[in-house]
Length: 257
Ligand code: LIP
Image 1 (cartoon, helix red, strand yellow):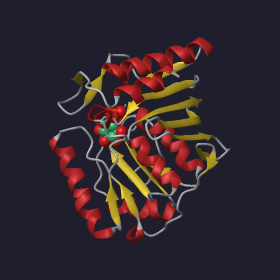
Image 2: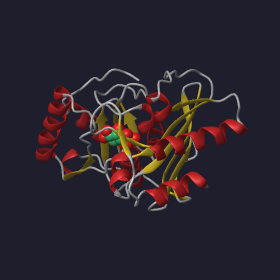
Image 3: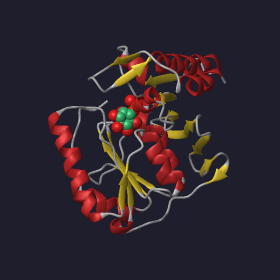
Image 4: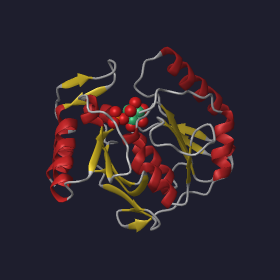
């Protein structure tokens, strides 16, 4: 498919980079092209379906999640990695009907890792079933964290406080620079939990279903139910682990999507 070729070819080429909310919130013409190709392709088959896309939203489209079938799309999650040629970048697509996620797809076309899930039917990597690690103890866990691209002082303080706190509690912390891939690592059992404040619906909608279908849990970082529009996510290999993590995290509440 043409949009996959774009990501594969352009990742190692020089790109013109624009910024969005701040100097490190990057976008390229390729993010915009991939999103347009995806929306055009899906619309031609399902003309009544609606879309929430990262780049359409940046160009001013209002985010509105209704009960109608809605595709939530991040054309290039990990844009910073894409800009630098770091091969941890993916396309993240979820289909929600009645606000419930039915399909989740996360594809890293560089490393050719295709994560898929359908509600009630399990999660898969390149067609083979995947399962979370089942780790229950925070002190033995490998946790995915992110700095994020906001340079808001209060947000940065929370991120750094959480990294400091976690360092003394867990086996290790890792950061891929793409929320969807972090969540897929939990689904795969390669990491035990992932959390982030300030991400958007398009970064987490597909990953949420993939983790749950792999046997994991997905909640709000303060312990309540996951809300795709809240810009807050915590997923883990077990509810025990998720609860331990949520208890020690310093919380941050960004404006909702
Ligand atoms: C990115 C997320 C990442 C987060 C970045 C950014 P993008 O998405 O995947 O987890 O830390 O701030 O939001 O902008 O590359 O699609």
